[in-house]
Length: 351
Image (cartoon, rainbow, N blue to C red; front, side, top):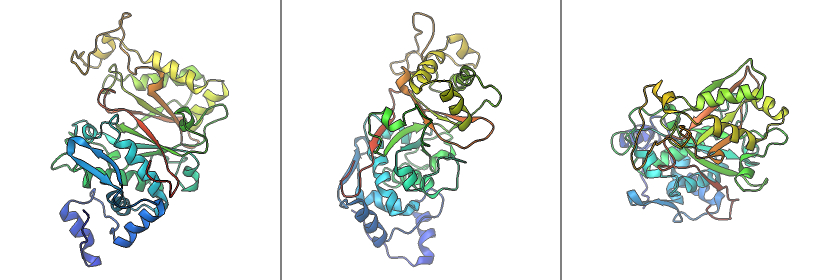
């Protein structure tokens, strides 16, 4: 049960730092009035359960979620998005306990798709994966603060990250409406055009993909395939999931040449099947364990993704020289998978 702590305004930051309640950055004091405003806007009760992590014997209430959303700097209008992200993150398929405790150091990556992206001011254009936008930064930060403060994923205790990466502060991709002929992510995943969804993706850091000179669609896709098959990436040849953020020039080249998103996924699923010799060029040895059985298929190759559906395509970013990004799942799907939830309109309850 949440308890009130009476502090002078000047003492809040140092007290929170001392108690380990921050991510290393200053926070907004979660006063009862601010927390209540979050709950009231979403139309949820403080005691409602957003989800649980059985391995930790922990449950996340709406009140705990609201406290951390305030601390992260969220506006009240963002709170339904935070709740959807938490609901997806707490789905057993996501494997939250493993994601936040592993040495792999995964981020709690969120992908927001739908009308609320524009309505709430998420950045989908220039610097789409970078700093400067309150909605992108604070929603992603709220998810991580919940993992830290409610689930105990702290460096000195539960979080076993050997290195981690900056996306563990906050990591969110907001989808730019795709080119004509391409469905947005939420529709591809079975939701409606009018819905807004949050897809939680347990992710490594983004890898920049550069192809500035080749105007041939297959050339662009081969560049993506090259990024997706780097032997140093843990999930290569182990059937993981990947998120591709298709930048301005690359999506125009592909769409204008008549490439559909399903065709792109099929091409990449096939062209990212690799040989043991390819892995050996990077010094990577095959594993033969219950979780990572890297026995080659009949043709001698290993699948990097199980199939096209494990490749998530999102459009974002502004015009430039020809940049996109590749974001791999931190581990094979046997450990964790992307999960999607619809953002509930205020008053319609929890996702």
